[in-house]
Image (cartoon, rainbow, N blue to C red; front, side, top):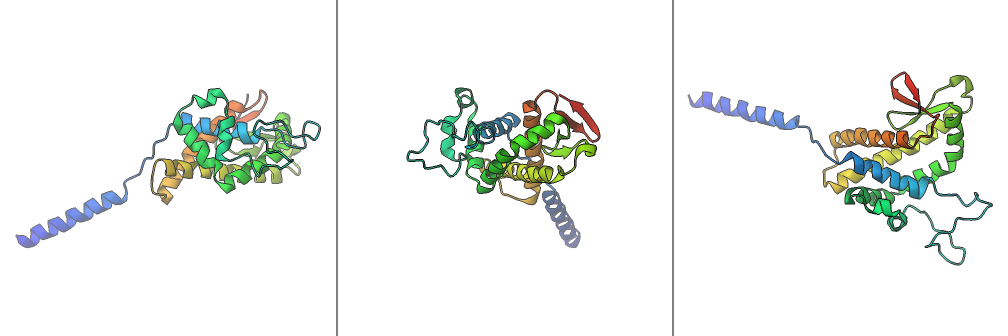
Amino acid sequence: MKLKLLKWLIAACCGVMAACAIITVNVYFPEKDVKQAYKSLDDMLLHQESPTEGGGQSPAEPNEPKGGEKPQSALTPFSLSLVSDAYAQETAGSDALAVELSMMPDVLAAYDEMRGRLPQLNALRDSGVVGETFQGLVTLRDRSRGAGVQPIVDAENRNRKSVITGMARAIIKITKQKESKETMNQLLAKSATGYAATRKEEAKPGWWLLVAPDRWIQK
C-alpha cells in the first residue's frame, strides 16, 4: 500500500513539474503605448532635418549647444522634452518605453542610419518599387525595377530589427520580467506588429502595403 502511494506521489510530482515546464508567460503591454513610443521616436529621430538639408544649416533648436558644438545624438532621454504637448498627454507607458529605447546605443545607431537613408527609401516607396510588410519590414515589390535596391532593403531591415528588438527588451525591463527565449519571442512578435501598424498609419497615399503573404494593397 505504501509502495503504491509512493508511486502515485512521484507520478503526481512529475505531472506538476511537466505542467510548470510548459506554462507560457504572457507579458501584457498596451499596444497603443507601443505604437505611441514608436511615433515619438520617429518624430524626434527619424523625421528631423539633417545638417546637410535646408541650405546646409542645422535647424534651430531651443536647446542647441553653443559654440558650434554638435550633440552626439538626438536620441537621449532629455530629447523627450521636445515632444509636443499632444504626446505629453499620453500615458506614462509610452513615455517610459521611449526613454528606455532612447538609451540603447544600437537603437540610436539604427535611427541614425535610417534617417540618412530616408530620402532613398521614400523615393523607392513613391515609385512602388518597395513596400511595407505586415512584419514591420520593407520588401522588394517590383523586381523588374529592383536593380541595386536589395542592399538598401537589407540595410533598412537590419536597422528596423534592431529597433523592434529594443522595444521587446524595453517592455521586459519595464514589466520587470526575466529575459528568456520564450518571453523574447513573444514580445518580438508583438513589437513587430506594433511597428508594422505604425508604418502603415504613417504611409503616404500611393505607397504599397503587404497585408498578407502575396497580397498587396495600395494606400
